[in-house]
Image 1: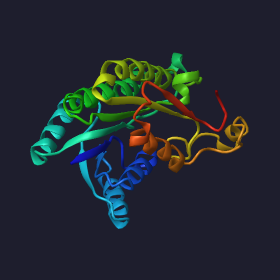
Image 2: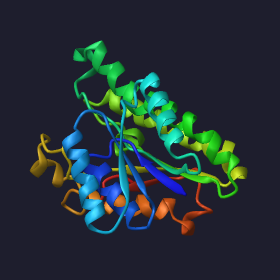
Image 3: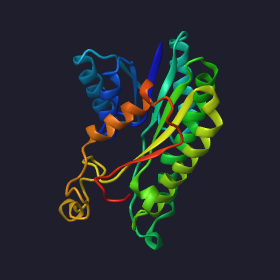
Amino acid sequence: MKYALVTGGSRGLGRAVCKDIAKLGIPVVVNYQSNEEAAKAVISEIEAEGGKAELLQFNVGNKAEVDAAIEKWEAAHADDYIAYLVNNAGIRRDNLMYMMPEEDWHSVINTSLNGFYYVTSRLLPKMVMRKHGGRIVNMASLSGLKGLPGQTNYSAAKAALIGATKALAQEVAARSVTVNAVAPGFIETDMTKELPVDELKQTVPMKRFGKPEEVAALVKFLISDEAAYITGEVISINGGLYT
């Protein structure tokens, strides 16, 4: 059986993505780092709608944890493999660069970029070995395309993730593995609730923030069979803020 793994799947965009993928009939592995209660709530919501899901705890920025968790999962699923991967886990530590602690630079880069490497490189061999390949969707950001002041670390991480998406897509295309990125603008999640929402809405042509479900619908399409010929793309979903 083919499973989907969503990193950072317990809240916000990850939660919405997990629920939408489950609606395709794909069993979902919900990754979380520390908020087990929220992750279990996602499982319950998926099961209440007739889907299948399970938990997998690890910190994407810790290679030893990634390897140990996936090895344990594979041992318990000898006849299965993770064919769909959504690299969603990410953190923000906003600050002007001249006031940014070095720890905040490294932690953001480590979660978004190194986390992508640790998880993807661990799962990719089985994807390319299988006849039906796989799907990888990376959660980038408007920040990675445009750059936003106060987010030098986050913008750098997401811009690098976009470059990695384009390169990896070419490496694995012949093996029926697609690699795409989604670049949300301002979305109503825990990561944006402390921002000056009313002020920022005025900068968006649609005059509102996006909903997690709108981003999840795009991710669901990119992992579907209908998107089999789309790879190496970065698709913005930002209400017209940046095109």
